[in-house]
Length: 269
Image (cartoon, rainbow, N blue to C red; front, side, top):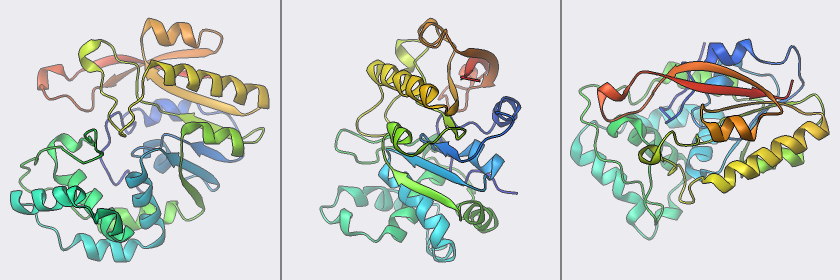
């Protein structure tokens, strides 16, 4: 058994069962181009898979977990859950030579910050610098060695790519299956959280994603997509199969803002 080794805004761990109920009866290769925390991937543990994300730091972590998990576990053991250690580690990307930091150390830094930052958020400023404050957790599990090893095993036959979601058009073949989990269309103006990368993900990108889905359909590729229950999404995908599900909000700074909300699962089969 394995589970996502990082927290991720919009992560699908709680919806994994609903998503699995709606998988195609059979398919060849599994694709997930907005991999994030990889909840569905780790629930399925597909034999043949292709995962991608535009977040280069995130993709580096996946590669290190797949290829150097024991070294990563050793590196993570060096970190401490203190405010001083947190801000020293967070501010590493403010230094001009950060790009020279070895991939292994970047991956350990990413996981450490994810486990100890406020609410497990990933947020960067306009310069691409991580800017989430210290989370003040009493005893976070910075290194879950057993789960990291299980995730590494699940990733062994997975191709991992730092790329835009449209990359699937170049690699997916008929009868392959693609799961899209993009940043959701905001329910209102105050919930417009799209800072997973420096570039964000706006309405224009939602239209481009729909075009990618149409092209995959024409190509004979099966796909499923998650998004918010909004008039925009319902109209955008009205020619496809739309299912309504309920999910708890995973990240909200106010506890009374957490509750069951409607989401949609769209598919072309």
